[in-house]
Amino acid sequence: MNKLTLLLACTLLISLANTSLAKDWRGIIPLHSSKADVIRLLGQPSDDENSHDTSNGKVIVLYSRKPCDRLFGIERWAVPADTVLQITVALKGLVLLKDLHLDLSKYKLEPADHGQGSYRNDDEGVSYNLWMGNLVSSITYGPAKRDAHLLCREEPRSISRSLTTHSTGMQISVALMRETSFVSVPG
Image (cartoon, rainbow, N blue to C red):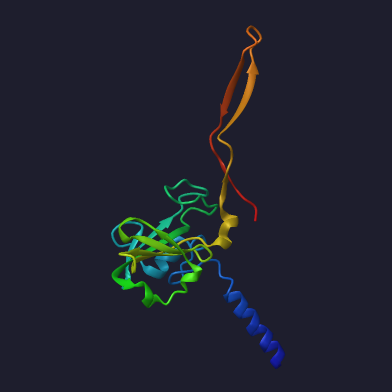
């Protein structure tokens, strides 16, 4: 293999590494890893079907139940059942935000009450959850912006039509209700 071919191969590998889908945690990637992957990497769940005890802390994994499932506070994703939607690592000890050496210019601060809040990077799908303003209590890994093509789109819940009665000439608005269904938005 000549030097030019080797250089091109290395450049390709580096560029592929920089286009990862989401920030992973220990090889688990939201929207791309399955429950079987999590069990293979972390073992059986500890006290319920979604949590694992690790040396870093308690890891809570949220899985899809079916494509485009409605889960409180979570966007709907067109992924199979038992696909990882979100990973939260509740740290055993608090970590100073500055000790993580993050480039905070790449994060959006989302303040909350009583010194809580988070630094969030939607491009990577990661959130550093704060306590007392500068202590990280947990880290949440979710879908990255590049995964937007997997979002589900909601069809209209109702279609309104106006009808005019023949006897009175009164116009009546009728809503035709349909069960809400979701479809994947093509990428």
